[in-house]
Length: 101
Image (cartoon, rainbow, N blue to C red):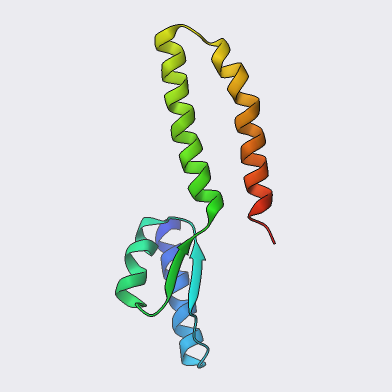
């Protein structure tokens, strides 16, 4: 069994165990793992499934950085990357800290 399948199976077993102990989960926060995202409404429709902001923001910034690199390559303006790199790093760091209690 690969890591992705084990992640889903572990969550499935854990939630079923909690329900068997009459401990009911109302909200669950995970990353955007596709199989878990698919499983939650099918297996546990009463649990609200949320995505943690760190993974959402990280994905958006990665896409932005790829677009920025493409623009720098097309425009032959690599100095743009140096300007934005430090700002992106600061933003990622701030977002990381805001996700922790």
